[in-house]
Image 1 (spheres, one colour):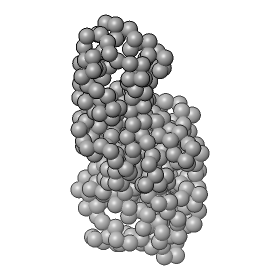
Image 2 (cartoon, helix red, strand yellow):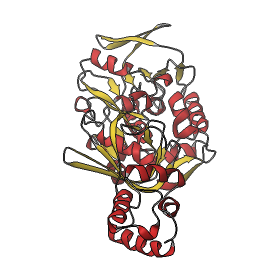
Image 3 (tube, rainbow, N blue to C red):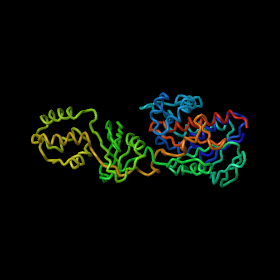
Image 4 (tube, helix red, strand yellow):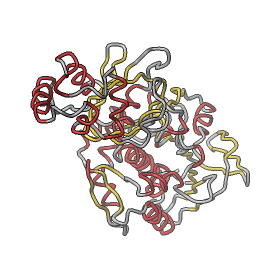
Length: 410
């Protein structure tokens, strides 16, 4: 059987590995880039967080959209299976904080080398710098027209990714191909993306806050994340901000006066903070407020904190009233900005939205509209939180389609 796979991200590569296990299959990978796995190469800041060492149930809890659709795929090819595949093929792995799995070498290139080695061993042909211009189906064959030649195949797999990081080749072409075959597209939106703020001028750029809790309330729904965040020149980013963005990207954030509330001391209640301040004020009673706040906050945050909470930096601690003390407590528990918008989709780690999974068979990733047409990875309306979950989605859906293709004898 002749199989063409468009895209050499983790979904396309894993699909090719499995489909080519049937020696009667002639598998060809097409990609417009000069090398395979271009986006994979830059993930995890070049270290490649290949998966998350967790149970399948916990994995699905980290999926934002359409987790039920993934049940079969993630149970068929688990994070443990991912680790086994790479380690058995010569790439040792390590588990870091949050069960994130990386190559021991900290080099994403080692992950790509493993795929390259296995694909070569299984005689998969890879045509690079090959741009697909159109796809059609004539009778029982697919025709793929490119800048170089025309390909004819029995089965076609679309693994072109979403619209994030278009410089890596993810330009939304897969959505165009899907629409040719009558598929519906859920509007693509940025996911795992920084949040831009209205009342912020970049004065905290570069500041990292650890062990804080960020809350956003929209339309009577509350979302919160605990951990690390950082300030950028036009807003906020970091792990918990990226995760929050994936929860709120379905809402209209413009002109809604939506607050982003940062609890700078989430492990202390207001009563506990009040007791601490009372103790501190005895110890530091001759200091002014600005100098005292170094006991509570990073130095670069103090001036902004004083301004946003209407405090007098020169007031001496022994002169602080109960009302002023309450302002300090309220500011620590709810340091607030208003959200302007999410950064654009180019800045998203992944894309939310894509091909409607209601039109895809979850058992093998085959189109319900067209026989022998498959969609895998980020091109589908599937996305998850940070930590290796999105790459695992790609690997599991690619595996499922590839395994099915390997079982066919057309």
